[in-house]
Length: 468
Image (cartoon, rainbow, N blue to C red; front, side, top):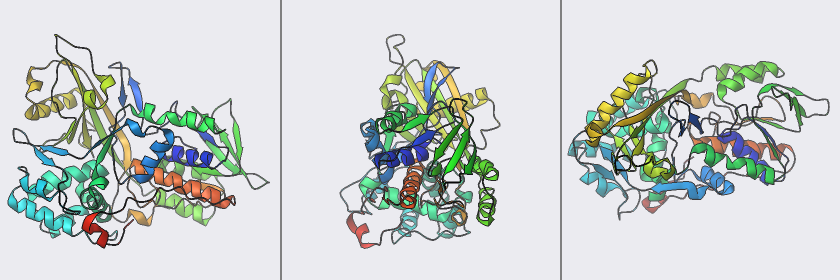
């Protein structure tokens, strides 16, 4: 139940294991929050927000391999940080062994002073031996306690982490902050490379429908869950809001829903102390928003595929004309137009703002990095606010994240919010689906493991024990 990344991962794994799967999704498409749609205001297919992955996302890469869309991911080893009017800072691997493979690039980085670089090196070195446990301390407090400069926080720690975890530094768990930096900057060059889909997200994940049907399973779109009840024979009967498929009998059920949708469904299930505890835990989850600003210009604005934008509200620029060539708009006046997506993570300040002020702010800030904006004509624009984009990775959140097991035998949980060892990411969602699929096969007497092997550490990082 649920056709987001978690539900697709569970369904595809179980279908590959020879089980007949019924995948039900209330929307008219698969992908959940990782999807695209035809925006009526601009007449263009756009992603609901920009999604990326890193090389460490081995289970997500495994899912892409299953769906035969791995070739639709473009990989990057270079990260460009831009300051208004200043020279670019390029962080990329060099000849030194991990964890020092990016050291030479950091030493050359004009965005950071020598004092900043010493502070960053000192901070990153704290994560070399392993990940600190989840505690009540937030990451901003940790940074200040470890002597980070204001500039290193503003130009390195904050843009990387807010983009990766979609939360403000003073609301982020130290454990998951450390995980991001250890695996993106220290573990190995391959671990930290960034993958960006080269096709719209719904096209990327829509291939799951054919994958499942080819293996004797079914996909039911526009099919919501009304209730789930045990049957006398030990199975489950799921009633839906789809009149064509009013009920689905099954031996097992995977609830691959958001935490709030799962919480709404709990009263319809048999009650017991464990279900009451789950209800209490789910009530403590919170959301964090992302805002995507889509701009179409009559000319080329930049030849960067993507860049981190520093000292502004906008945090990332993705050049969709280059990343997804099908989005390249027709030539205007002899010049090729361009389509950019700007991303603001943890965008609470933008949520109450109207569309036009957000566009005006974006154009003003974008012109500080790319002078061509001042001469360009804005052809159209769209603002997409995902108010419930991710859950907030707060300190001590792991204490309330449930496992794939549920309070009911034969019912299993999936979703990026369950205990996977990962934060709110596509990798976390995929792992949750694979863990739920393993739990199903174990319960039905044919145990299998679906999680992909971890990416090995490289260089000197092999001297340290592997962390989850």
